[in-house]
Length: 345
Image 1: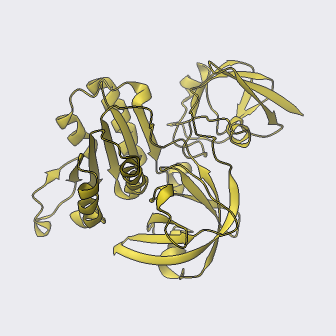
Image 2: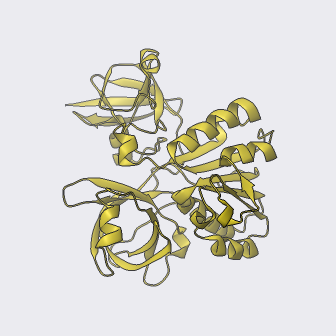
């Protein structure tokens, strides 16, 4: 049994198999819908059900509250149709552009720029082309079927030889995957992965000034966007705000110095929240999204690309729209939801 989902205002329709979520079917059909975690935790896929009936799988109340669900809002990542449905959702041009594929990857190199961050390069199979947009992510498939998501930190033109993707992994003590990465994984290990996923990528058709906002390893997809802007020869003004607890957590400061030489219009503002006397930090302090607001009380003519912890993304979107006049549809985000976030821990 299948049901048909029709998207308004795009007037695109696709079939959804029994027990399949709307988002999974859209991805399979190459239809670009907005989404992030695919686990009911981030709320990026929130849409309006105009007609029909769905059943929601497990999701976080912060992603979709009971009041929102009563008002007809749904999360396409965990909503399974029970009838034909009409859904009001913003189409994302290019989100379904490249096919989703499963592939093996070989660990090519591992580096530790800070105590709890690993930069891992994973070699792509030579016989299986992998295409993606700067800002998208892959999912690693673990032996028990569990999945872990990580953004590519290099733009697709910058795969190198042999072709490989760069990933930034923060150690989550007790984490099923990162414990393995930091204690047992070694070069030449084989990993299983699937992708590309995500609707977070540069909207190249715009000429608006850009604010990039990153917290922690949320810098990974932001790095890919910077590489992409350089590759395009973009002249759009760009200001990056990178938030971290301590200065040492700004683990690619040297890379940003080089990037500024390549992209002259790039301004970089590091923001540290928990500096101590021994850090001798003289730069900006506090919450990173508040630093943006101090510098840009009017964001009405900008685009914002934000990546990092859910609390940072939620605060930034709320305050930038409500207090700085940022158009809601010019806030693009990738919320780095951990397994604890997904399960409400």
